[in-house]
Image 1 (cartoon, rainbow, N blue to C red):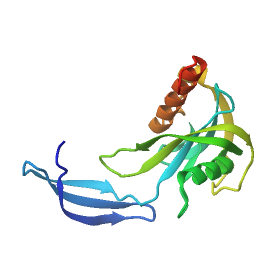
Image 2 (cartoon, rainbow, N blue to C red):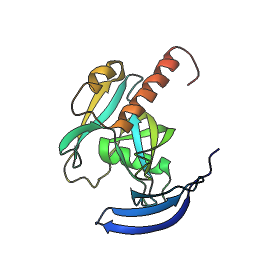
Image 3 (cartoon, helix red, strand yellow):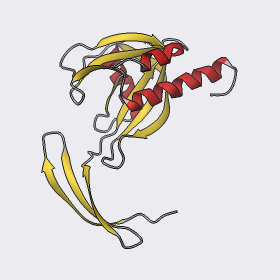
Image 4 (cartoon, rainbow, N blue to C red):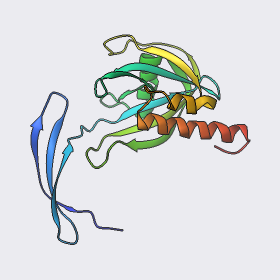
Length: 187
């Protein structure tokens, strides 16, 4: 196992209302020194749910993505509130964004996003045994809720408005879980 680099110095070089950019000076085990920049990551995790109405029907939402300057098809997701665990956050965010509660929530994987530049982590969660239930959310406009068949995942991924890598990864994971269940294999 390689030895992690020694952090020689960190300093905040820019800050906005939402983000901070941090410069890190590192010394690697071979003596090489480098300066990296990264987004300062708040200690808040997030959850992303793959809500399944049945073993082939996933619930998606369409919301505006400011980074892409377009509306995107995505999965319900959001940050954990202070002191909240992933399970409670998943249940809350699912109700706020998609209008469903779930009787069964299973963590699929903890994922990172661009680990070379940020430390953000998200819990990908399979949400099953859905029932109608809604809570008021913090979105600036109502989210469009729609469904898609996982058996038609290729057509979904061909769309220009389905681009988020962690959403695509979670959909593939759930598609494979459902296929194993249908084949009688353990998930």
